[in-house]
Image 1 (cartoon, rainbow, N blue to C red):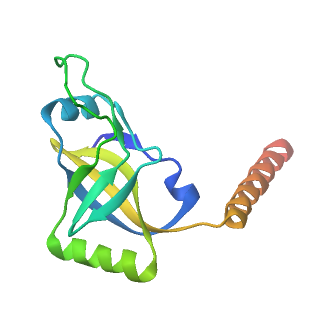
Image 2 (cartoon, helix red, strand yellow; image 1 turned 180 degrees about the vertical axis):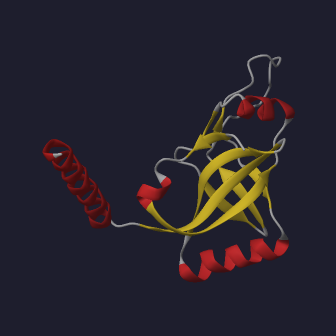
Length: 149
């Protein structure tokens, strides 16, 4: 399993409760580009259109060895492959509880490309500050222990 892209802001901006795995519907040149690591999950999110889920705003650069691609948009919505029961379950959570579907990482599983996304609730600004202050306190404690030891 090779991790091709990772969303660093996911755990910082959201409290992720459940994680799910989905396949991605991509064209051939997009698959080659993603396997080379030319994908960015920065500012991307999962949206629902009807009874389907889409990865929106993920940037996949065009494969440089492919010919001229007409009407190719790097941030177009890409369909996620999930079971109907999982989609219904996720849509219920999003609508009733007001949660968000956040992409976490893109990786290969055998020869397939998979997207891991989580059901998250947005953190408030003071929660983020709290996490930063805890991290700094732990870093200072480790530094002091290293100096005294």
